[in-house]
Image 1 (cartoon, rainbow, N blue to C red):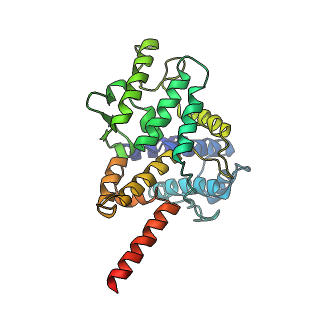
Image 2: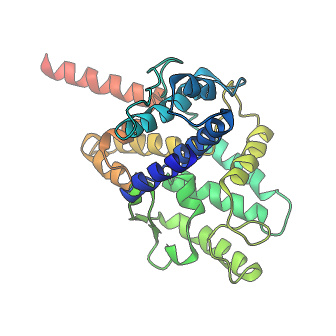
Image 3: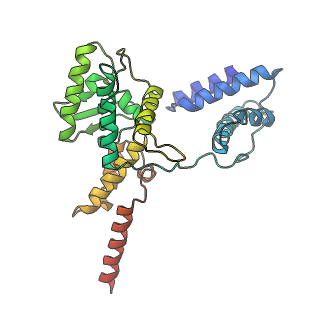
Length: 301
């Protein structure tokens, strides 16, 4: 099964699909199948057993695991007719939008101040700059962590985001206030690690890992008391950025309706509908919407 999965992933990736999480899940599934006994076709029973292995996980995670195998099974069935398709929605829906946490400007400032206090010669400046950059640009975490020194053009005030989601490359202009902090961090990193291959580095000068960044952010978040049943994420800074930009535009004379496509391109989205995923019903936005409706109603009367 492992060789079948790897052939499948090779074909899909050749078509431009990254399949990072899906690839890891499918290889895990394939190893489970290969350990389970005699070789044979992919069966519903095996798919369901594997999807339900993680007892401590929620139904959403199990549903996602089953969906990944089902997609692979549909591909495999074209060449192997005895392949059985796992049932759809056995564990419920496989996709649900997690409620984002919209950080206030004060909370972002406090997170950055706590980041400055992290021990180490470069750890504090790294996280202070990383959080500030994501908060003011809405970058995906992976995009920020994959930045190379040459991708950060501080003379022109532009970031080059290379080969991001769907293999797209784009330019992200920086606000003038972001340039000085980025320049200060670049000089400090250059002093400690002149041969660093990424813009953000660990205390050892290596590329900053996503898991490490998420773990450190969790410590910072706990320190200022931000927490709910589902703890806010570093990625929620992207949600906060999107909502704040929309709120700012709504307050401007031009409004926001004609500029959502610009925001979508800035965020690196293929379709404007992808941008709607990041919009949340902030009280301020609802108040603006209510006022706009009231104004429209008065004009009609």
